Length: 330
Image (tube, rainbow, N blue to C red; front, side, top):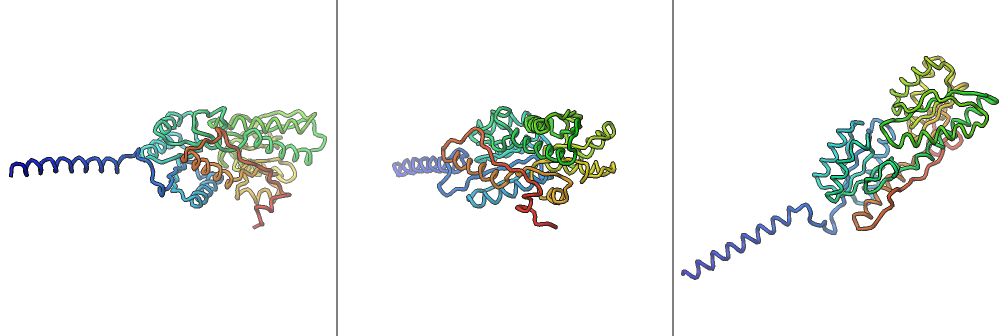
């Protein structure tokens, strides 16, 4: 009987040890994924109030569904600290990857580095590697090339509407909190001037926030008070271009005859403006291609493969000549 009790005590201890081990393995966040487990990705955009990001989020979802991924989509409403909080939440959640369109890259840097230290892949959208070298990888556009295309569109408008002009004023609307803004808008200014040889270009607005319709409207309204002859605006995005149209119209400027306004993004809401000639053109930023590049990169990283530090997406000009590829009219 005594031997039986000893045996029973040993048996209970062994089974208890097995139970603790099994429970620990099941709840261990560091345990490897099973072959059938879905890759879990969080996307944290700038703000879906800007149409371009709203469309990008839709494309993330479509591509993720096709790749069999699980997607968590978050919107910080253009608030840097909210974006930090979301990154920290997703880090605690233990997602496989986070795709971020930064509100302010430097504000989120510490949170990004913490996530990466815990084995999470962080891919940054819309930032050149030179300005944000601390992520797993970056994806987006060649910012200078995008600005170049926008500047070329505006310059072509000046040539058509003001042949033989000797001097002209230019407003450049960007986003000072976004490091790549300076690269993009620098490219726009350079291309605008390069394509108007012999014309004295005075940049009257530069390095100011004009990335939404509201901010653009306010900036151009104020600029027109000091420079009533301002007629050329290149914007960091299409919302900037739309805001400029509204501001000039409020001042009684004949947009079709006098204004040379260009943006970037090829947003759906901009198509009627391009069709009517109020905005001379935009740059198609290939939302689908952006989502494909980012999410396919995540698949490679999860599988242990390498990806380039900077992954670019192709862009093309959008003008009334090729607008029909996207817009069929109202």
